[in-house]
Image 1 (spheres, rainbow, N blue to C red):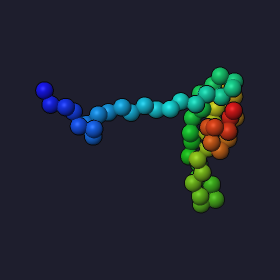
Image 2 (cartoon, rainbow, N blue to C red):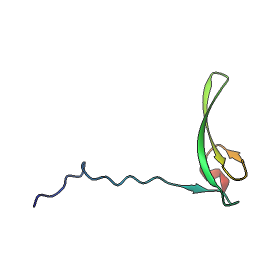
Image 3 (cartoon, rainbow, N blue to C red):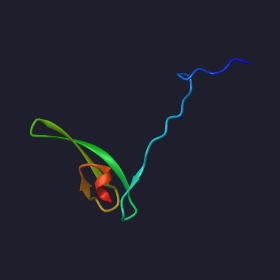
Length: 56
């Protein structure tokens, strides 16, 4: 039996972030003043931060 190559392996996982309020954090892209901004927003409390790690 042949071994599977390292490129054929699929181990894709998505990292989920959670707000202290218990809601899930989603990344959103906004277009303001001719620039693209990425923000993290909590679905439950609608709090926005620059990165998901800023919610801690």
